[in-house]
Length: 360
Image 1 (spheres, rainbow, N blue to C red):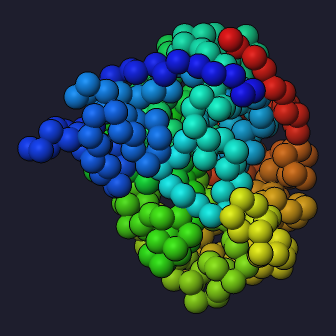
Image 2 (cartoon, one colour; image 1 turned 180 degrees about the vertical axis):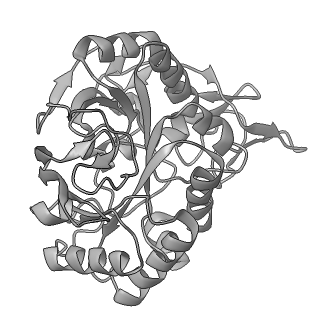
């Protein structure tokens, strides 16, 4: 990586011209107001000659085949492989970003692979991937590219997955999710203070995205919260979040609690103790949530899927490896309880592999 590329200047959606001549980007709640030549906070949406453009269309920071559980999605064709890629830049400024080398990069620093939507769909087919994921950085900022890739994938029988912080506007949200089959939304905390201080963003638009997905779409989605010691892991905050989750999203949306490790601008915090994740899982389960998981730690119980009806282990997981499988279609093989999600008759066999690929 580290090659220089020319910006694509692909026409962008969701913007308006202001009376003073500047352009207002309406893809995300920042509503960046750009004079000629200026770029938004994300760095990849730019005012070029009075038009808003996406400078990273068709250009990726690299492709990799992953297990779908790594996104994480535990109820979306378990065991299958997903062709994953991102671009550069991000519309949040998380101090603890785990992919900061990509999300904080300028596009000329990180965009090392060129690929059209049709090329990506064909590669996913050839590699035997069930889905393609827009990940590593947030697809909201390269939505035009992601939507075109999603359409090409659907035409080839490949599912489209958005891994996102959900930080978007009422204007961009509906069109974006019309093209997606599944999503994992990163709910970073449950206080505005955390979002303001640690992400340079706001909580409310993320909650709006979650409610929109639940109430207005058929997109399968799961939620992830990275627990940072002393920042968003208190029992009162987790209880409030779980109550909101149960009331607004219902009992069947999976929730993943994952462990933080010191990174980027938050090197002063310790790793998340496994017991913190176990406690968070118990709090969410006590509110009636049926599918609550732990991640980034070795916890076979917390990473496996259990039947809400009879308590049987339905999908055994050790890391990203699947073991025992006790589902018949999407029901418990013992009691017949219907499990929310998308399941094939048999699990995929991709396992724990990570396969970097080059499409350029």
